[in-house]
Image (cartoon, rainbow, N blue to C red):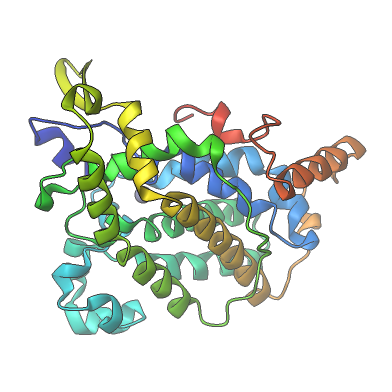
Length: 331
Ligand SMILES: [Zn+2]
């Protein structure tokens, strides 16, 4: 859920989740990105894959204790004026001059956060600081994920302005939870150097924003053909009864969305790989194997090869290798 305080005050909470993209997708895209890295980066990221994948939701958890964290996860473009996605400055310093930082904190600024964290990751690579590299690689992975979610780019962030409250979690959590097993989790992409990261992340934000209306329309169409008895169920959570969307409705809505969620998932994982790689190149291509406490063993190398093969053949789920499926909550 994008803004937890909002979720707490609504009488009709349509679905509960404390994440964005949902734990499942944030973690899945992190794992998929690792397999797209070149061999010089691969061993380090692969060896740390458990923590990269499980902690990819950490910035959402941080919001519970840090009041300044929430606006780092979204951008309510409509509040920045007409066609803001195409008119806003590409960089944060220009945006602060144009709007003030208070405004950015009010309406969100995720594309600028991605650029800041990319720089922090680059600095960490340059210093060869293993813990910082992991920390910022994980944060970068999360914020890129959020920038690719349509409702993270809109003031109609939960469908509340169009009578579709709960749409946020329905799209980013319920649908992939139900349909991920049928998704294609590979598109042939390999990590590429991004010469202009500011433009690249803004292109993703525009792409996500253009999906807002289609996802709204698809829910209306799904809703029309679905009786409330199939659409909702009552659950008891946090000492109260709540009306939530059913798994069955997630499937129905997913069918109306076509490949939209899968496509955004793939685009996100590709971009994460590109940004990790770009930070490493800009840092002067440091020796990542030197940062491993010990070199990969024969078994490690074999496991890594086997996973990459499963990834290439889109068999990670079939072979029970998708780590997100084994990590139900926050550890
Ligand atoms: Zn988030």
